[in-house]
Length: 309
Image (cartoon, rainbow, N blue to C red; front, side, top):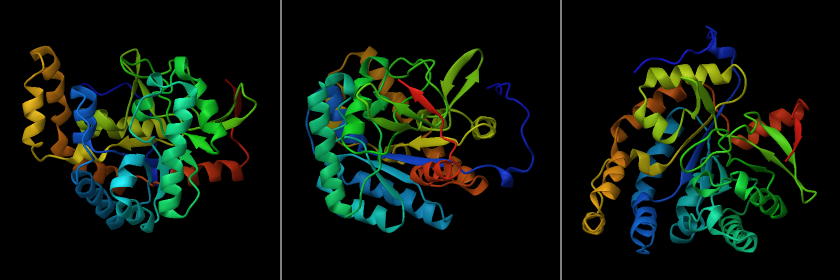
């Protein structure tokens, strides 16, 4: 794969700003069973094993991250949430059942998010500042969700991908961390996901499937190019480290799908064995803080730009 035509890269990376690692805590098995087959199962213990891999990796490298957690994970495994918090990581909200905003009315979204926030704040005993929508489903058509998030008392949102995608994305949205003045009269700090320009297109970078699919050198160059201008927001899911075979009931259900619908599922497993190594290389080379700490640094310098939605 050809490297993107990035701008010149500084040599002294020690002087670069902090970036953020963010983890969307969900269980790949129960999400797929619900979304693909309409079979509702509880989160499986695989999510605990995969989160623990991340906690050990971050602890070894003295890294603190932001974990956006589903309410159903906190309900099934409250001790996992407390363990994450005990390591000094920031806890955020990822909704309750991973329902995307386009499936909600505003009142339904408010109820879903409030339920998750109340539960997780009760589990941790701490105020929650940040929210990330399932599947980055805050897009132009669901921008009303930002008002709901603000009304529920969140300080910031990190749901918007400023690029055009097949399932999500808000083209022409600002790439910068900024304060949004909302139509409701409220405000919310937005922390967009990181994107790069590549072959004439704007695409997400440094997280999720892009971390799996691209070679590390591509990700590193993208990281350096983005970090010249703003903090990099790296995201991934615990299941992206899960190389074990899924349960038999998943494959039995998958057999009922047409070949055209089965083929994309194989991409969920591509390069999973490379994620821990790539992530380890990133965190050994670059400095990271939780998202809330980066926002606090911005506020101390009084340089968060303000934009109207």
